[in-house]
Amino acid sequence: MKVADVDVLVVGLGPAGSSAAAAAARAGCRVLAIDRRRQPGRPVQCAEFVPALIGIEVGDLARSVQQSIASMATFVEDDAPDFRGNFPGRMLDRVAFDAALVERAEGAGAACAFGVAARRLAEGRATLSDGGIIRVRAIVGADGPRSIVGRAIGQRNSALVETRQVTVPLNRASESTDIFLSRDIPGGYGWLFPKGRLANLGAGVDPEHKARLRAIVDRLHRSLAAEGRVGTDARALTGGAIPVGGIVGPTGALGSTLVLLAGDAAGLAHPVTGAGIAAAVHSGRLAGEAAARACAGDAAAARDYEAELRDVFGAALTRAVRRRRELASAMRAGVPGAKAALRRGWIAYPEYWAA
Image 1 (cartoon, helix red, strand yellow):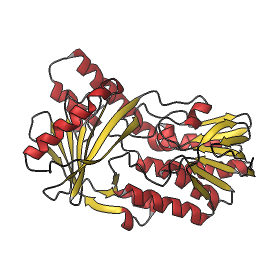
Image 2 (cartoon, helix red, strand yellow):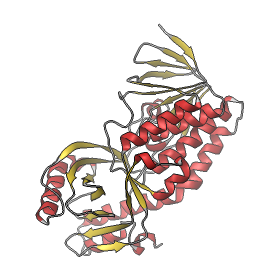
Image 3 (cartoon, one colour):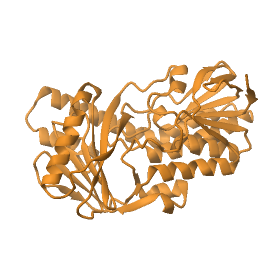
Image 4 (cartoon, one colour):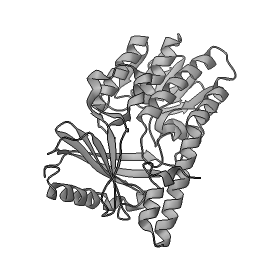
């Protein structure tokens, strides 16, 4: 049985895990990062949109960007769309983006292994699916909304949205993300995000409505195809869960072993939009730095990490959780003014930002 010693074990090699591995390695730690998937970014389980400001965190995105986004169009039921200009973003090739972040982590000195999962986590050690035993000083959980690392320290995402997405031909060039809000998409929304000659078309719903997802996405696809906006072909089916309950306690311990959660594992995806890539990159870097500080003997590293996450993300996530709950309550009550409730629950409208 192989036994190895590392300072920091990172579980998950998406944007959060790769960023954590790079940060800890740059700080001089011995880092092993693992992922149960066979290669970076596959399968793609997101709509691939990121805000333009993510460039501050990751630098040059050129090889990962499929196109720029300038605006957002929001369709509320059958109303004409509301446009929001000055909404700069980028549509990514997630496979290329994730691969670039892994390369950056390896360049910093982290060892990255795919096709390997964490089977058991305990104080000072981790047992891996390949039979290896890793002696560790700190663990970063960056393994998504159903994190096994989070489960090991009793921190789970209790609220999720289930998604389904297909890639379709885009008949007319667009620089807008299109959002579809409807009572028929409970707990989520539909989207059409352009990426050159193709577009990601999908929807998310509360888990109890997961069985309706295929019909919801098919109906949206047929409607947009009938308008001539997209082709009838559908390919690259994907889906997954998004945490929508806000921050999950991002720190914990297994005995004397520090455990930090980052990205979706820490509940940092936006509870209304579902956006999580930028938060994953930022929190991953902070987690890697905090793990390195802890390994160097800084007793305040975990406390400072949690405080920074709450300072950066807390207010926005708290508002989004509140808006989700308000909208869900209005939809359950079946009160008049459903369109007004949908608008209050979406970031493009002033009502969302009101007290």
